Image 1 (cartoon, one colour):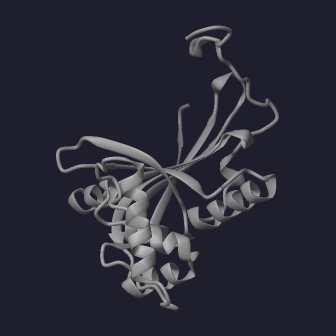
Image 2: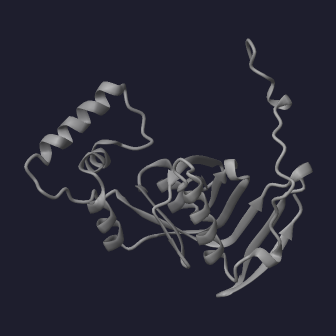
Image 3: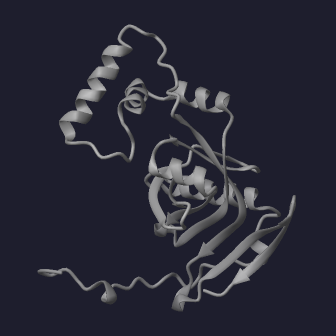
Length: 219
């Protein structure tokens, strides 16, 4: 640390005393509760409220994380799209479990999800790919995601080659290495900041197929 930058240990932000989350506040199921909080995040004006930190681990248990954009959710889980040859794609295949964190800190809220990962149907992936801007479609063909490249110029040359390949083509096909992943939750935790670090943490946890319980976790 240099200059006037404060030490991380000295940084404190006291959460509001009048906010809270009780069991009576929760919707009957995690999906309805998430839908409500997601709508709040959009209305609040958060930049990219669908941004989430996706955690995966390789076959040996070594973890990695990155920020990804949520592209859909329903009672079956949370969907995002990726290059299946990327680090997260390879890890999700070798060790099909993941965590998601929605860091809505300006609202003093987080949502934390854990669950099993499964690929989405190819028709769903193709429909979403077709909706992407053409530049993003070309990028999916051009970028060997998570692989080492010699420099920026090599990446830009790969993009130019993809643009030339599909020049004049009205439709760019979905790359064979690209698709969607769905995280089917085992737990969905709703975290509300409280004064004195006595945060409210209420977690939906799957007990059996279609059977959920709600638990309060200590902060």
